[in-house]
Image (cartoon, rainbow, N blue to C red):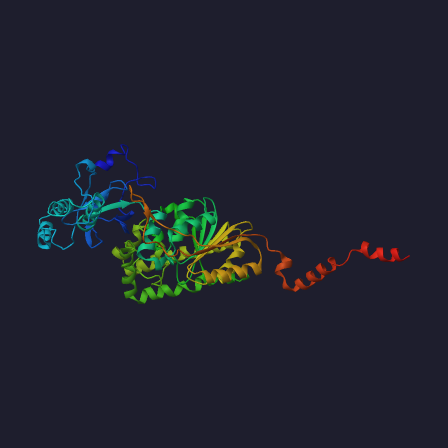
Length: 496
């Protein structure tokens, strides 16, 4: 195995290990198309109208390139030296080439027969070049473009990448931008920078981007510090977070708290009984509804696809536990009875309640090091409520796909006070093609990646916050603007 030659001393499957292991999440790349899947033996994966198995990628290094063979296998592709420009025979221009569809001698039936024989895509491309009557008359640039087009069509070459914030954000933005609120990858990078995300921080995040923002924060913090995620509905959606493949140590500092309990926490009326009221009903539902169990049993198989399930799906408390790092999740349902599964469900609900109480205790300290908001809800009420949990001199960042809600939020913050350095920004992105003698901006570019409102918290001035004192403050200022006493005394002195 060539991949093993680069690492003479095998390493255990830890985060620092660069090898692919069974159960890992990986990103498949073919040309510019990306897809996140989980590596499992004898599991069929469909990608770009082709199916294959990922058994042969186990043990290889990330970044390895494979070619799909007949039968769905993957064969490691060796790098071949590109032919030098001296051996190429090219024309001076394309003015005499007529696109009449008769330049290719091979028909579609001939190409299909070659595929049925098991001939590799590279050989099919070579035969297409040899049977083209106009290939040698094309310019060198046109030949490269022709070869690239045919390789994309006939060569099934897959590259295995290690998931990262940049790769996953590009993947989501290209395939399903609606699930991340059309947040572009450069906007996400700006959020991490403006929010001062670093190891050891205590961060609060409220996002409805399938867990992409949460995963980006966890990756940057490296398992040090704590993150409190506020979620709407039944539970947090962390499909994209699971694609990162974080170890269990990263999850120890991750807490979640329901968004509908924030007001009670601010008012001081929050209690543990409020958490015990709702989840008890779910256990009875599990006991009486067998269809719900089948629906949840099929969920782990769907999580290794590219976030196929809608965000407002069945209860999402399961979404973080159903990660590849916890394969024993299915054990009670597979080999145990229905009663054992219910007990396991209740045990995990009890653990979740404890983590909710821990999150409530962390929020009650009101000393968070930063706040990140990226949701489909209106940002103004969210930000005005959550800023009370952030310590002074700490950054906050709010993302919205549209500018108008952030303008309203900007105005409300200026009226409220307690913040400085407010800034509403939009990043502009253009991709460039960089090739010899062909470097230029690409014809297609992104129209917009969303807007960011950022700033810093300060100690709220009580005089400014209390509207009842505004009138007294104005009267004091009016007295100060009167004529000084020294000037008033000069008039009688001059008259005498």
